[in-house]
Length: 190
Image (tube, rainbow, N blue to C red; front, side, top):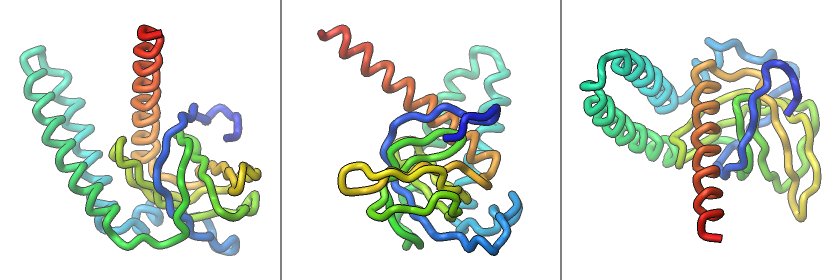
């Protein structure tokens, strides 16, 4: 990732991604154009997550008696997210499948069977089942290096919806928290 004032930390985590080469002669889409490029299922998941975040924020401002209601609504929301995620992953995906190995709010890293050209843009659709994240973005290859018999390619986001950046940041914090818990448990057993 490029180190700038807008960069976020990244965490190692495996996920699925699909890459479609973006024509360099085509301008990078605006936020609205990117939203229009989403499948109906992806738009639905994005809208549901945005509504959920807004409602939970309002409920958290209530007193402690609302905690049980908030926990129940989180559970219901998670069930809906799981169903939508499953439906999205079951759809026919366009592009070359790659395995994601790291992500954050600024970009992703993937393992590709072939080298990708640095500076080239791709339309990227990614799915993180364990973190219930599915999104569409435009990303640029910033580095690609040989690793064993494949290529480790780093992408920075060129266009991504603000809500999707928020999802990735929350997911990266969640993954980091899980890693810290595992490390703590491992240290206690050693």
